[in-house]
Image 1 (tube, rainbow, N blue to C red):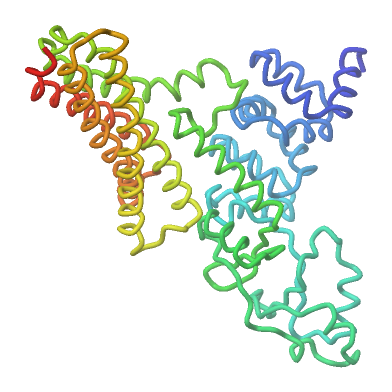
Image 2 (cartoon, helix red, strand yellow; image 1 turned 45 degrees about the vertical axis):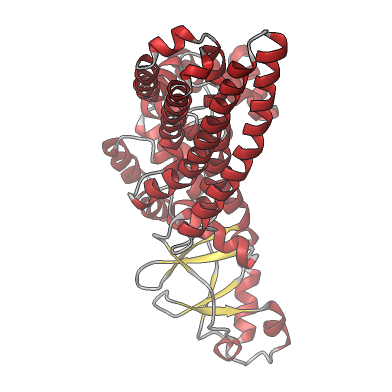
Length: 440
């Protein structure tokens, strides 16, 4: 082995996190060249820490036999995550090269979406057959690897989940007692097609360390552990945070420029369109702004406060939808609460703003009292309307998007910005026209 390859291997073994970040900074060709020099075990350590957009091209360029050697060394769940990134043709070719005990769980896992219980479950789970005695069950547990023991699940001979037994009941039972007599059949399980968010919420509500996953026939196919649910929840939270700002859920800090541009540009273009709509509203009142220059100064204040109010409502409602705090039938209550809170806040903020505007115009700018009062009334009324509309929109938009089957985190903020800008400018400049005799 060459000295450079030895140093690279040692670096990855000792500092895998730093090595993954370094690989993500390399261009694709250089990363692929270094990748091919590493042994399978070292590659596994690196792959588990690389972002999908980096690991996928690296695996795609490797020979199928080489990829199969790597996958044998990985846990089925981690390996299935990698395989989902590959083209379907290459995936089928790789699975054919693997031994059947390795290929079967991978084949089963890759058919699941990453947002389902099947996509986040660990397929390696130990179970006891219902026809065993207590003595035979204890002997079977002793032979079972500890990493696949979660709860003592009991299955029928056809693999259907029958229930669970406790270690205490098993240990105190007579050796010849059938474990069917110790069985607790009332067990909480989840379908392999259930959404990962529902699984995470269920685990949090029940405080489970693990949840058994069953298929449509009731057979035990895996288990969702607490750690995996926690990681899935964190990933979903960060993905939602990125999507709210218009970035892709898969984007990372060191993503290539082409990935960043492809994910962000469409939303920036849509945002540009909404900005032109707001500008068109302002253009309708061009003559009024020319007569009262102070209007141009105060317009960002009205729009900005509306945006902040709407963002607060939006964040709370999206969180409520994600954590299933807002269930069917409660949408109206949530909307009314946000509207009332927005109206109260808007009144308080608008009064303070109008007083500040009055002092600015009358005492600092030297305007007459009529103009100062008129401008204070204009900004008072427009801020109440805009902030109330923003609070209402921040609650309604994500709920409507969810009802349409869309991700509320993906585009809510753009629609909200459109509402706050247009309503803010239209109300502020509209009231300015009504009170124009006072302002001039």
